[in-house]
Length: 253
Ligand code: NDP
Ligand code: 8X3
Image (cartoon, rainbow, N blue to C red; front, side, top):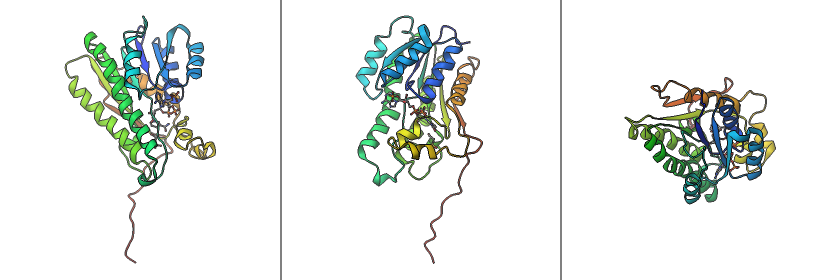
């Protein structure tokens, strides 16, 4: 189904990205797997063999992104599909308590990283008049929650960037999709809570969150629709997750 397709995945060293790499290779693709943790990339390369090319890459570094894309070896050099998956939330404090460094890292990774990778890979897709860009948004980009502040805003950016990119690409055979998952158990909460594993684990306690494999299946479904179909956005959440009523502060006693 994805035979001879080259798929560039950011943040493939864990969670959704690693699951996408495995499933997409199982469906015939070759993958460029990237992330900062080299030992994880090496492990993935061992597992996926000749179908994978590894790239130690921090998406916040635009020069490194450009250089990495320009120096991809054949047969990984003509990227058909980009999965902008690398991203993170840092902290769940109200905005004024959030560290400036964490704010910067979320914006630089979740927004700038997506822009740099897209900017580096889109010209090749345009030249070949063929491509698909999949962004990893979140329900946090649509629904606010206390402490979501900057993280949610970065994901709202992706929702709108995806639609605007589609407007720019009208008339070309390049599709654009934003995937918007709810709570899924990965390393996401360990990162969000700065390595506090007990706190991270408690997020998923006594419930059934989405899994990385659920997200990979969703990505695969979007990629394998007929060429005339573009999935603009797709929102999914655990059956055991739902919405809260609007909060009301009662100040009149
Ligand atoms: P994980 O923490 O398990 O994986 C995140 C991945 O992003 C890792 O491979 C990490 O690799 C990579 N990454 C982080 N920063 C950078 C960077 N600067 N440069 C390159 N790679 C980076 O989380 P998930 O798999 O859950 O998250 C994947 C995406 O899905 C994120 O964008 C997240 O916001 C989104 N999401 C997650 C949800 C969830 O509940 N889990 C729900 C909705 C969306 P490394 O550290 O090796 O660089
Ligand atoms: C991750 C999902 O609900 O923790 O994007 O923000 S949530």
